[in-house]
Image (cartoon, rainbow, N blue to C red; front, side, top):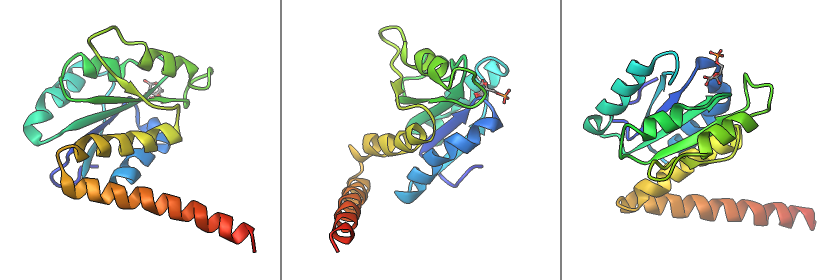
Length: 167
Ligand code: RP5
């Protein structure tokens, strides 16, 4: 699922992760950011994962989002192989521990190898997309304006809900 001129690489440990991870792509699309979505596992395809990560800067990728469940080492392995910002999404699917295992595996990185870890599951995936946008907006004024509009739109939606409640 590759869009033209992607700025964000979304990696998932398995295609079974897409139900939870699609929110990251949706958030990026909402802000007009192209992404490349790939299935690659830290455990089952370590060489393929390293290749995708090493090729990323040359392809114009600015941020990498990784989603994995259970023994979720994908984000950590990716962060160990690049200096691009890496956002980790712990996933609940495929886990008997509701994603707590993935949360700890993603967040508990050793000093010097950061993974920006978001919430478990769909909410985390959406926020991974918005966080990637905020990182890129630091050097992209047009994107920063779109983010300001998005935030203003959210505030307006809350006010509208309250207005309707008062009717
Ligand atoms: C993890 O194991 C994947 O990210 C997925 O969340 C989980 C189960 O993978 P499948 O067995 O569905 O391929 O590595």
